Length: 354
Ligand code: PMP
Image (tube, rainbow, N blue to C red):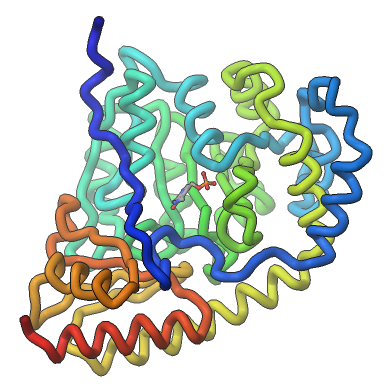
C-alpha cells in the first residue's frame, strides 16, 4: 500500500479538562431563539432531497449582511474548506503560495495536501509583517495566492489597511485575508473591497461562523470575493458539499446579529482584563485583536507550565514547539469565570517554579 503524503498531521489537544481555552471557540452557546428557529426549520426539511447546491438563500443573506452580491459569496464546511477550495482551484503542482510565519498552520498544511509549493517569509521579532520580506518573497516567487491572516493566529494582531493594500499592489495573484477572528478586530479588509481599491478584484476575505457566531459544531465558513473567484471555488467543491441543516443554521444565525455583537463586546472586555492581569505576571505577552492572547513565561519553561495548567484542569494551546514561537502559549478568551480559573492556575504555576 502506498504511503500518504509526508505532511505533519494536525492533532487537536484531546485532554479531558474542565476549562477548555485551547481552540478559540466561543465560550457561550448560540442564542436559544436561534436553536428554536433551527429546530422548526429542520422539522420541515425535505430530507430525501439533496440540499440547494448553490446555497442560494444563505448566500443572499450573507451578501445582504456584507452589502455585496450573492455571486460574491462562496460558502463551505468551515473556513478550512473554503481555504481548501481556493487551493484546489488556484494551487496544485508547479504553483506556489506565499505566507508569513508564524501564522495559521492550516494554510501551509492544506497547500501541501494540494501539492502546492509553499514559499514562506518570517515576521519581525514582534510578529508584524515585514514588508521588505513580503516584497522579496512575492517578487521572487510570483505566488498564485499570498495569504494574510488578520488577526493573525496565533500571534493576535490584525493588519492595517495600508499593509493589505501594499501586499495587494505587490502580489500578482490572489491576496487571501483570513479573517476568522475579524469581528474582534477594529478593521477588516472587507473595507478595501468596498472602497474598490486597485486590485480589489484579487482580494479574497475569508470568514467563519465558528468563533463569534458560537457555531463551531455546524462547520460553516465563507469567502467574499469577485464572482470569478466564487465560480472557481464552486468548481473545486464537491457537489452538494454544504448540507441543508448547515445552510439553514447560518441563514438563521444572521437574524441574531445583535446578540453576536454583544458576545464580541463581552469577549473584547474580558480580553482587556486578561491582558492587564498578564502584564502583572512574569510573562511576555503580545497585543491581540482576536479572542486569544499569545504569551511567553519568562521565569519558567513554557511546556512545563502548560502541563501544570492541565493538571489544574485548564487546557490552553501549547505553541512551544512551533517554529518561531519557542516558549509561547496561547490562551483563548473565555467567560469571566473561565478566565478567572486560568489566571488562578497560571499565578499558582508561575509562583510554584517547579
Ligand atoms: N482560519 C483561522 C485563522 C483559524 O484560526 C481557524 C480555526 N482555528 C480557521 C481558519 C478555521 O475555522 P473553521 O474551519 O472552523 O471555520
